[in-house]
Amino acid sequence: MKHVLLTGANGFVGKVMRAYLHEAGHRVTCTVSSGSLLQDDVEHVCLDIRDMAAVGLVVQRVRPTHVLHLAAISHVPTSFRDPLLTWQTNVMGSLNLLEAVKRHVPEAFVLFASSSEVYGEAFKAGEPRDESSACQPMNPYAASKLAAELAFLQYFRQGLRGVIARPFNHIGPGQSPDFVTASFAKQIAEIEHGLQPPVLQVGNLEACRDFLDVRDVCDAYMKLLDLADQPADQRVFNVASGQARRIQEVLDELLAQSTLPIVVEQDPQRLRPSDIPFAVGDCRRLQASTGWRPAHALGETLGELLAYWREKAAGAR
Image 1 (tube, rainbow, N blue to C red):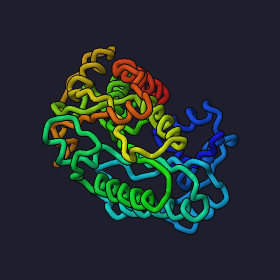
Image 2 (image 1 turned 135 degrees about the vertical axis):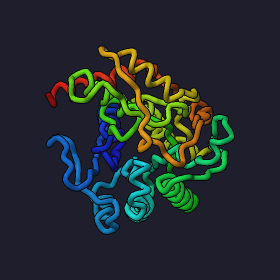
Image 3 (image 1 turned 90 degrees about the vertical axis):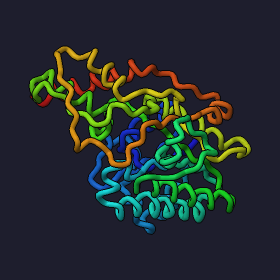
């Protein structure tokens, strides 16, 4: 049985990952940010990942066999507004965790959730990026994730065991409406319940992205954790569908499921100055190493996302 230390357990991915780990029969110790609550029966501790001493004490007490590091500032606009917080959390927080693992549980296996955003300018080639592609981050979030990757790779060279995942856009119920598909679904649900005029505000609909159900991403993480029992042939893995989906296509699918006619209007505030037209991943390395394949169709995921926001909107009336 694995004993997994799961950082960022109260986040969008963390909540789903907790369920996957428990279902597999593993012991899970969760870290959550200050003020966040989990059920009483969930083993957890409040932790500011930026506090080196506190991170060390938690790792020393928990003594995990595996660490899954999800805690991060992951919203790109937030990274522009507060780059210091972003770098302190994503880079120094990762270093604090790495030092604690090295000192107290050097035999533990660590999985770091990075981001496809690290490829940045390299996406402008207009082709799916694989793990050997150049990393040219275009925002503070992506830059901080790449810096954290470099830290992990340095510790791996010193003998620490682990891998880095670069997930592409993952979506599903519970995601913040700061992200595009959740924003669409939330607005549609609120329009249907009379909480918003029948006008849906959007950003750039022409961009192509690589969308995955959050459950498929968590399944990939489960399979990557199992690599602890195998020789380390590779350290970095894309988690991607390999399929390009226009944002317009995603919106059309959600609108087709709406019960009311809705007008779509572009909001200049939702346009990113650094937006790129095409961001898709090549995930053959992950498939070859673990046998992972996405199991959830995009239409299914979008339907569940809309149902989630309809329930929220009904409760707000």
